[in-house]
Amino acid sequence: MSAVYINSAACISVQDTLNENFFQNLQPENSVQIVKAIEPNYKEFIPPAASRRMSKTVKMSSVASKYALKEAGIEKPDAIIVGTGMGCSQDSEKFLKNVLENNEEFLTPTYFIQSTHNTVAGQIALGLQCHGYNFTYVNSSSSLEFSMLDAKLQINDGEADNVLVGSTDEQTDRTMELYKLNNTIKKQENLPVDYLDSKTEGVIWGEGASFFVLGKDKAENSYAQLKDIQLNNKLGLEETQKFIEDFLTKNNLITQDIDAVILGFSGDAKSDVYYTKAMDLFSNSALLYYKHLSGEYNTASGFSTFMACHILKNQEIPEVMMINSVKKEEIKNILLYNHLSGNDHSLVLLGKA
Image (cartoon, rainbow, N blue to C red):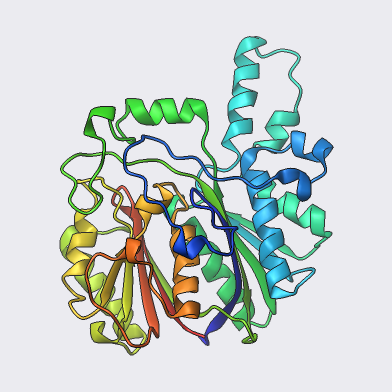
């Protein structure tokens, strides 16, 4: 498959990533259980009447997608593909609450209609009057990777020239309570967390929306080449290195060819061992981590993809992301490795545009 170019990148996250100077002002967070996204003033982008009916994930995605399309200079993409782990969970919770409070009678369908996972892609398409291919992937932590793989296939097969690809997840009160009960979220007494050497289970939970325009042609301001993606639902710890090596071999690369590796260290001692295992392969690469900046969530890899795009474009790595002290003259290839709680492993290979 030929390479596809990432021609724009926009992100709403726990960091102030809509600000042009965000690269210098990244603030790590390791001492609270839940971190919330820094949201823009939605009135500037969405009419207030419409905004009131939208859940947080729809609003974040609408704004991030507008930024991505504007930067790419595209009014209407040929396709819209969105990946999400939890979908519009705020509206799902409202609907279920209504069901319980009204004894399953006299229910308004609005919350139910807006609670489906494909609401985000649908709302963006409605706003743009885009009647092209519209798809939503709900594949836990590899939702964005499946979306990008689909977009890459669409472009390589000549079905589309420019595809809007996004990932989005929001927090909801009830779900966060349940995550605390089943120890998905770190216990208060285990904070602050040492992301790289944690001895306890659980993570700090975040949220956000990341959108990219993928195109078949390189633009003047292209961020990166999307070279390849590999996905594996289940992986034994001892298979980790072979999984990575086979992926690199498939792309005619060896570990020394990778200038930077972005690993999804989340502070969960049980599942971070995969990243430690992967690190052993890359003694000559710059090793980076990012979830101390974004929090963990189903589509946190959107944040790492966004950061990787900026690293390739600026040829500069923020100090706050560095695990080791390896510095490269030129950053040509970045490998992103992510999973959620030891499941849904993904490898993404990005190259300099």
